[in-house]
Length: 279
Image 1 (cartoon, rainbow, N blue to C red):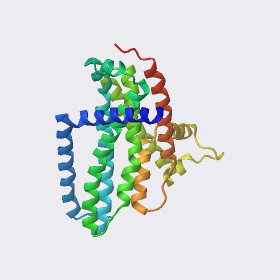
Image 2: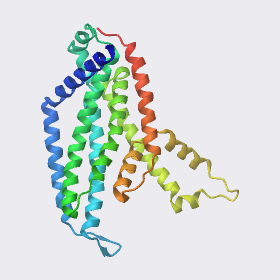
Image 3: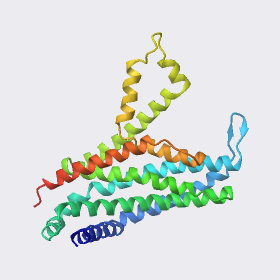
């Protein structure tokens, strides 16, 4: 009987965390502006584009624009998730809400889990709605449904969980703005790591890596190690986009990489918050 009760407490906290953020005027304004921006992208579907001297067809334009929009929305959703999460703990502590909640028969892990679930759910909903708008625009342009686009959006929700977890953890250790900047740095590092790895797999990169002895330069080896050990946020986006592009398989390493980081961050967050002084 104790487990369902514990779960119900977590979901109640998640519900209130979700509702608190939705009621914020800034969140409403950001969502409206983001939706308007996505609607404006539909004009790009009607343009004429030439690549290598050849005019792109309507379907090719729709595919290309849908992928560009997918990346923009996924990156924007991570930015919003970081903004939402960085001030949650400080606000609850300064307003006395944290002390009030902890004075009740609620474990710390329940509070933390509820907050994380609420913020993650809001971030995922924000991203999914915007992706759904692009899905509708793309489907109308191509005159066929592209349901895999929404599947790819769900895959990218793993990135949002990572952002919520790491910002929550860093906000316990650092000032809010510093935690936010650190996460932005991680995102930029992920983009750099994925770009370097993609280049190393290209023909030019392979040619540069070749040496008479048959060994790769140590610099390239170090950069590839950076790719494998750095949080692969952009790699997860690329995996989802590859699913959109071919409707088949996709690289699994970025997903397992981010999932592993989420588990590690969850353990660290449990340990750190258990030792947090609450006044």
